[in-house]
Image 1 (cartoon, rainbow, N blue to C red):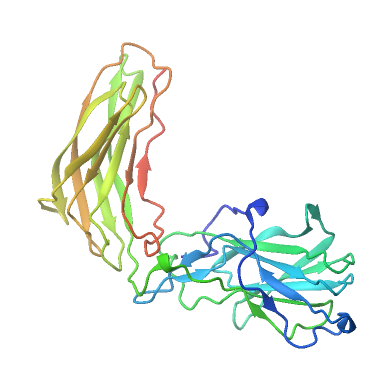
Image 2: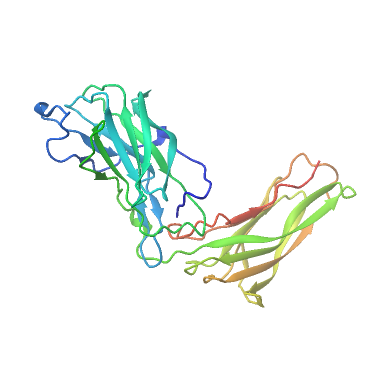
Length: 344
């Protein structure tokens, strides 16, 4: 589901982080620098929103991984001296580090530094955050080092993903006790399954008016290609959204499956007509297998605008109601559109 080679946009909203269930507590008396006499140790609590599904391969169940690489360090009876370190290890195929790790207490950002290292044998990456200020017992800082990122087919299946772990220790002391940040696996992720995916592409026609100085694009053919390895769990359904100032009607007039004429059972589910939107929603009875290609021909009726238009609804075609998103591969091509019309 993820790959570091693919460009991605980091998305992490610190205000949206919530404490996860199931605190993980350091075993034993705790690090030597902790105030063991106070009878309190250090506790790591996973922090994050809903987990993300990772597709490890064919014939396995989607795995649950934390959305954020983040922990809260609870230390009710133990001061944290300057030099305290929180190390979070992760699979770089699944996560992208923040430009700089963040440590906070309440709404205050702590003084801290961070370093990132990668084990050449396992390829597991670790971000170590060093607090450069002392914290009194009970301050319970939150440390965030990165977030999961989506990548596209064919890199979206990750074999044997390494789990994220966290440890707290003193500067220059190797951590001896790591705790898993693995979240509970939602029931909705389902059981053993085979990933599937679809790509949407097509052919556009151009309608012109005002002696060719104004134009609008509309789809003439929609192509849906299955990247597999599994079969789509439900029949293909899609929507076509156009501008009613230029388009008056849309019909599906033919279908071909893998280059041969095919009765795809295409039918109109619904249509929406407003002053700014003409959207039709369609379904078929085709569940594409790996490698299948379904081509649908469209007949579009246009109307000539009386003059310049104040704005247009750019044409968009996209999948709808395709069901199980936890086993759906990330092709990045589940819709297509044009934004290069000229209407004024």
